[in-house]
Length: 423
Ligand code: LMR
Image (cartoon, protein in one colour):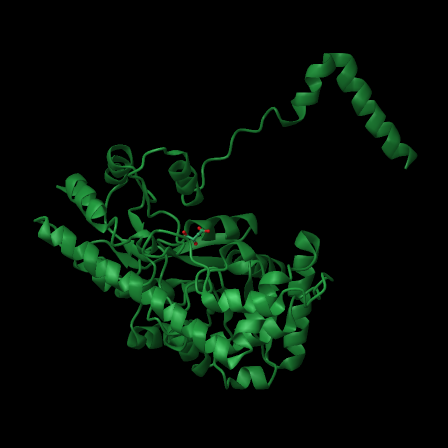
């Protein structure tokens, strides 16, 4: 302690005697402003634009047909039911047991043997990002020399997450720019050529940013090949329900892998499918050999969370467990998820038709072929910059359009602007 005090006072003495008050700023002198986030930075730019014409199709956040954020009826009802009826105590380190149980049913199936046999180690997470980050840290801690294979392209934050967990990143081919569809051959080759026992990050459904998913048959081949190579599949399932409008169908890839005997990991998020963006609520799960291993894995996942944020917040967990734990509310929710997915599908058709009616010589078929929240338009960064400068349309520079921000009111304006910059 004495040594510590001496060191501290020595530092203060040194800095004040040498350069006086200016030294106070010297601690962070070398800190440069961080680059803008490629997705959330778009929202910042949109908010700063005073133009009445501005359109935000950047961030993947659902809007109604008036362009307004939506709070689902099932969420409002759950909030009404829980209001005032719970205390503000800490949740257990691993989060809400009810919320986790319901989440596992959603990901692995209502009657999953893995759940019955307690073979899944799982914790409540800070939405999908938090789940991915805890998993990345878990991977680094228990498989320190492993790498993660990430699709090209992927959600930009995946790179940050595994970078900050100090896991080496490799890529695998996923998107085929010419066909604007899946590069299945490239993907399979990269799976085959990766060192045995590698980690693969897979988007369970509604791939972000491309809106391109493997077919069921292709998932079966992917699963088979990963098994042959002894790879580990980690699913990021941020959009369950948004691909097909049906949460069971959207979990099909996970089902296929489980049937093949994989021990997958899975990140779930309720940001999109329950509209609980700011609640930061999700689930991280890891399939294990048996119940004993699952208990051990869960304890280690909690252990990783403890020094970061101790334990997760309670409110979002209560909303989710109230909705999923009540058959009536769950039914209402499933209908609302389908409603959101259907509105987006309608906007895909409208955007494509508008572009075709404007006489665009390009093919816009991929707008309706792709699924989920995003359209990977094929526009170049320069074309996107023109959309922003000339038309106040905000989107990520990789050409991704968040179809959730397209409405009957702005689809004509958007189509016209896209037509102008792609002529
Ligand atoms: C997106 O891709 O737009 C969303 O997942 C929001 C985010 O955090 O990037």
